[in-house]
Image (spheres, helix red, strand yellow):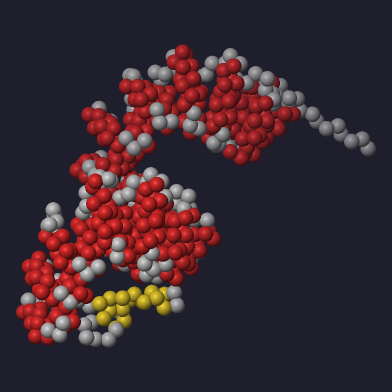
Length: 614
C-alpha cells in the first residue's frame, strides 16, 4: 500500500502580506495570533521583509515581556522602515530603556532616515524620562529643520521634555510660540513648574488658562491646590475647590489626597473628612493624609479610630500617629504605639525613630530609648543629623550624658543643634568642664554658636560655680558673636549669681536688665532666697510675683516654703489663707513610671496617695 504524499501549501508574497494586513487591522489580536503570523512569515521566508513583519515587531515591542524578541526580529531586517523604527523607539521608551531608545533614534538618523511627527513624540518622551536634555535639544533641532515643531502633539511632547529636565525657560518659550494649545499644553507646563517648586508660576498659568477659557481637569486642579498648600493661598484654594464643584471635575485619588492635605494644613478636619468620604477610590496616601489631619488638629480619638480601620498600613501610617502623639505631648502613647509597630514587624524610618526618641526624652524612658538606638544600628536606619540630635537629646534628658557624647563623636555630620544639645546636656548632668571644653572646640572649628548654645554654657558655669567666667561668656554674646541676649540668658545669669549665694547681686542685675523681667526670672531669685534664707528679699520678690502672676499656685507655695524654712509659721498660714481667698488651686502632680520597659502614667492629688489613671 502506498502512502499518500503530503500536500504542500505554497504561499505567495501577496498572500503573506494580506495575512499581515488582516492582523494589523484587527485591534484585538492575541499573542497566539502574533506567534502564528511570525511562524508563518518564517516558513515563507518573509520574516525579514519590513512590510510583512512590521505588525509582529509592533506587538513584541509594546509588550515588555517580548521586547527582547522584538529586538531579535528587528536586527534581522536590513533596511527597517520608519514605521518599524517608530515601533522600536516607542517600545524601548515605554519599557524604561530610555538610553536605548535615544540610541535607536541616533542610528536611524545616521542611516539617513528622517523621522515623522510620531518619531519626535516618542523620542521626546524618552528624553523626558531619561532625563536627557542634551539629546532632547539635538532632536528638537531636527524637528525644527523638518518643520514638525508646529504640530500640536510634538510641541506638547517638547514642553514635557524640557519641563521634566528642569529647563523651564525653554518649555515656556515653546509654549509661548504655539499657535494652538490644548489642555495637555497647559498641564505640561503647569506640572513642570510644580515639579520645580515654582508655585507662583503655577498659579499665574492657571489664571491665564482661565482667561483663555480652557477647561481644567483633575491634574490641573491637583497642581493648583498643591501650590496653594505651599504658598498658604487659602482663598485661591477655596475658589479652586468651587471650580471643581461647579465644573464637575472628577475628584480622582490624586486630587482628593491633595484636597485632604489642604484642609488638614488649615485644621479643617470636617471638610477633609467630607472629601475622604466622597472619594470613589482611595490609596494608602488618602488614609495617611486623613490621619495626619486629625492628629494635627489634636483629634487623636478619630485619628486612632481611622488608623485601626485602615485596610493596610505602611511606615508613614504608623509614623503619622507616633509623630502626632509626640508633638501633642502625649509621649507615653507615642512610645506605646512604637512598641506596637515593632510587634507588627513594620520597619521604622528615620522620621519614626526621631519622633519616638523625642517622646522617650520627654518621659525619661531610657530603656525604650536604648532599644530604639539598638534598632537603628541593627536595621541600618539612616542616621542623619536629625536622628543623631534626637539620640543626643534623649540620652541627655535621661541623665546619660556620656552616651550622648559618644553619639556626638560618631556623627559624620553635625550642625549647631548637635553642638548645642551635647553642650547643654553635659552642663545639666554635672559635666561642666567637658561642656566648656567642647564649646572651646566648637569655636576652634569655626562653628558659629547660637542663642541656645549660650544657654548651655551659662548653665555649665552656674552648675560649676564659675561666676566670673559665666559673666564673661554673657558679655561676649553681643560683643564678639553679635547675639542679643534674650530673657532665658538673663535668667541663666540670675541663676549663676544666685547659686553662688550672691542673691543681692542677682536682684541688682534684675533691676538693671534692659528688658522687663518675666515671672521665670523672679521665680529663680525667689528659689535662691529660700535656699540662702534671705526672707527680706523673698518678701519683695513674692510681692512682685503675685503682682505679675496672681493665679499661679507655684508662687504661693514657693513663698510659703521660704517662710517655713525660717520658722515664720504665721506667714505660712497667711500665704495659705491668701491662696484660699483668691481661689488658687494647686494642680495635681503627674508622673510617668517605667515598669519592665512599659510606661505607666500616674497622678497625685495634693495630700493624697498616688492613684493610677484609668
